[in-house]
Image (cartoon, helix red, strand yellow):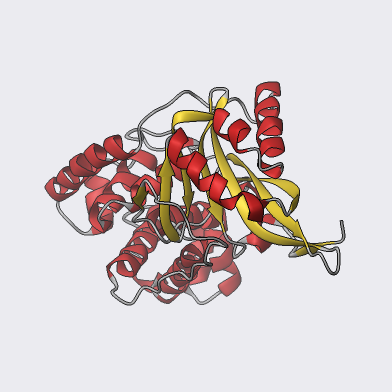
Length: 334
């Protein structure tokens, strides 16, 4: 017997080690799929663990009509759909802003968004997407893409990710979801239309680690730490966004963003250090402020930016909930 068939036979006989080895190659990609579906790293972890448990319990019902990988995707997708359709999904707690926010450009609908560490994305296997895929891997994990996906109804969300990100054919996606091909095709058509409106293309980002990226990020960090609002806004595109989920306030364009950062100037002067990390294949930092009494630095947020050409198109601020996944300590001595 081939290795996968042997592992499957042993796992079906109750061998937990064989089951762990059987699903090991698919763990990270399933976790990322749950994240794309749910937008939240915490909710993705819960759905992922439920997927593994359901797969172990239901292993005897696996008939081999699809690959183990596709079978696992079926379980994970439907677990995520259950979360999205549940009326009891917990609303994320939001830390209030230190000052009253100025009038926002609008109120965002995406509250469950969290960043996904590149430290975990680097564990993704080198699977080629199926023939139907429309998005390359870096774009399909960007915060802009994940945010736009969260605005889709659950059935459209699943259809888009299965077809355009993972590359399953319509018949395969329909089988995964337990619906007809027409249902998948119609959901995908509506999802693509909505995503095209919400996820407009812009200039490509400079290559990670390139001299162009380093120059832009150095200027950004200097303006950000110095609370130089004029310099900060000058680095941003005309259609730039500032978001801070789960707070709903969103600011778009130079004028709105200038008002926002101006309102926070007094509070932001306390930033003492920005520790670079990466999230969603984008530059990010842990933001540290100095305690005036102890002198220690305390992590107060995670900032993620989306470069576009030689400017910044998005700034998204997150709380410190996901800090351990980025290797960011809560405090630093200096």
